Amino acid sequence: MAFPQTVRLVEVGPRDGLQNEPEPIGTETKLALIDRLGAAGLTHIEAASFVSPKWVPQMADHREVMQGLTRRQGISYSALTPNLKGLEAALECGVDEVAVFGAASEAFSQKNINCSVAESLERFAPVLERAREAKVRVRGYVSCVLGCPYEGEIAPAKVAEVSKALYEMGCYEVSLGDTIGVGTPLKAKRMLEAVARDVPMDKLAAHFHDTYGQALANLYAVLEEGVAVIDSSVAGLGGCPYAKGASGNVASEDVVYLLDGLGIESGIDLDDLAATGSWITQAIGRPNRSKASVALSAK
Ligand code: HMG
Ligand code: MG
Image 1 (cartoon, rainbow, N blue to C red):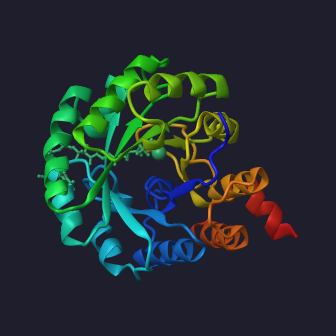
Image 2 (cartoon, rainbow, N blue to C red):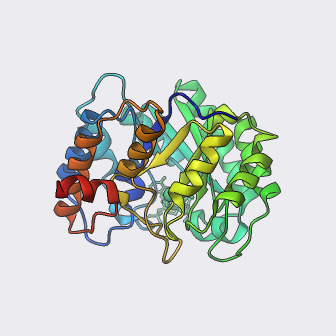
């Protein structure tokens, strides 16, 4: 299969990238980050997470973030909403799009959202129904698609089963999360092939964390299979609060560098994005995990 001509990046830095930061980050800093990402050409920005502040304190200012955005035309600002309570709050704040998040691992589901996989799907059904009424699109995440911090190996058939359930429930896109970044390219391909038998390829996104340094290689593998939506985080920020040791998402700058080199259109200005990565890492005192960004800043 040929590479896609264009790829849509979903920037998850303001949510996945920041959710694990132990020290509170000011709402103004989050808003400035979101604005700079929009200026760099990102059209899909996951801005906040309407989850319990007891579970994820860093996302407690979700309302202020969602309401404080300086909206740019053509950008979809989304948020995680694990249940109706989260969805109602996000709708009140004028969210453009929401996401529910499930897992292909029972143990991870329990740790992350305090219920079984089957219970999570039951919980998502009214969220999708209410979102449909409000004309807000819903994305579905599946975590642990290439391995689980508690259960180890995860069968591709299980990933396919949960993905299919989310898609049939009405999620317009299913994002496949290598939550702990343990995957390797052939494994990623096999998992994708299993899922693509149940969900059309153009409804799938790759959400790869880079814990073992394999994320770009895994992305190359799934791009070859026809995946055309990639989740990434500026400067490779992040880690999952319920997956100890997991590092951030693949860095957005590195993905754009790869896409540019392959002649795949993303609409993103790499220099602007790299400058944003340098700025946010300095602002929050974190290392810049984008090699492309570090190389460009050293020029
Ligand atoms: P629970 O304790 O089972 O829920 O948590 P509950 O309904 O019994 O409520 C307990 C308390 O939470 C109550 O407050 C509720 O009001 C409150 P209390 O009465 O104790 O004061 N509550 C809420 N507050 C704000 N917003 C809400 C909300 N819902 C309940 N929406 C729940 C269930 C899902 C809420 C909880 O487990 C939770 O918040 N989990 C969040 C986990 C999370 O955010 N994880 C990180 C994001 S997922 C991820 O990073 C993976 C991804 O990137 C893909 C990948 O990499 O694989 C997406
Ligand atoms: Mg993630």
